Image 1 (spheres, each protein chain N blue to C red):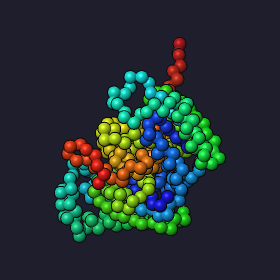
Image 2: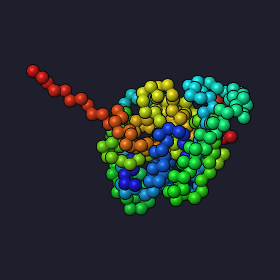
Image 3: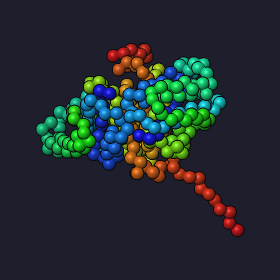
Image 4: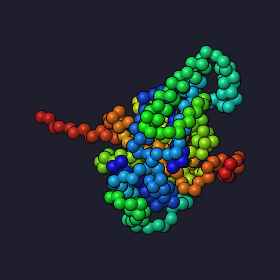
Length: 173
Length: 153
């Protein structure tokens, strides 16, 4: 396999990509590490921001302290993952920072770089998160032209509904 | 890696799971091949790529041969009825697989517009990683013009 894209963010859920990459993926020739900055903050209306609004937002952020802080955070995240990957023996790691709608930006990079596989973490743990936040991995998988591997952290997800057993009701007298 | 759950059906899109298994995943020791049969009355959308490939057993046989061709590996086949996402998650848990590999049934424009909920459900509720394979030979980027025709960009 030539190229793998690994999409990461600052959440704990992202770290599962590391163990999945080490154990479940054939070593590729190179890895593209992508972090998508959320310049619109934690807005839930991100889907409604079109390209014109986004570029206006980017323009107004240029050179500001906020942007510098975002860049610093991206660098920290990417160098953490880069170090982990290089420690695992991987030689060719390229880091990419983008901003905008995460699923779209990841797919853009995937197409530009011509990757063979996309690996992403999964963050939809709580019901409310899933209801309101949407899911980067779901959106991305829907539109991706290449296979998508959604990494999970078994230790954290143990008690999902799928593992729930039916209640055994005792008859009482 | 020890155990892989491969979910297959009679559509062409399923064959992409084979190429993914062979090229992207380091050889597992054990493969569980699962075919979920549809309970009746479920489909109101015509699936154009469904061909009369044969019975579940025949289809599983085809996949078993393909998997075993790749090298020595233990294969277990299963045919189960029910709601695909529920069955997949159930089998994954009972068999204690390390990863689930499934196809994406979004090859035509109509299918891409419709729900595609099996992958979403499995992806959200699985406790192990889920690898969604895409149809082999699909053009790298496909866009749609206002008349709804699909062409490759």
